[in-house]
Length: 112
Image (tube, rainbow, N blue to C red; front, side, top):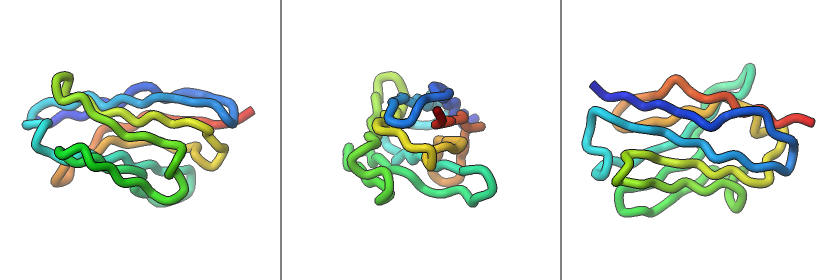
């Protein structure tokens, strides 16, 4: 049974940082791409970042240079380091694994 469990969300002031984690189980983590998505209040879920099993990374334009996706295959965990956070980054952040596995999400609120 595939399980994805996100953690690390919370309330942070604009300009601050947070690091999200996604612990995966139930599949061969090291051979899969992993993604982060987010869903802001009243908006559709959107893709944020991807890391391939090769380590290659890809980012949505609005987070480039501020967010970093990484993975630790020994811990079956993918991370999202978020710096220079803005109020528009406020959303529930979801971890995703192919083909269609999702975590329950972790809420990030950026507000003063």
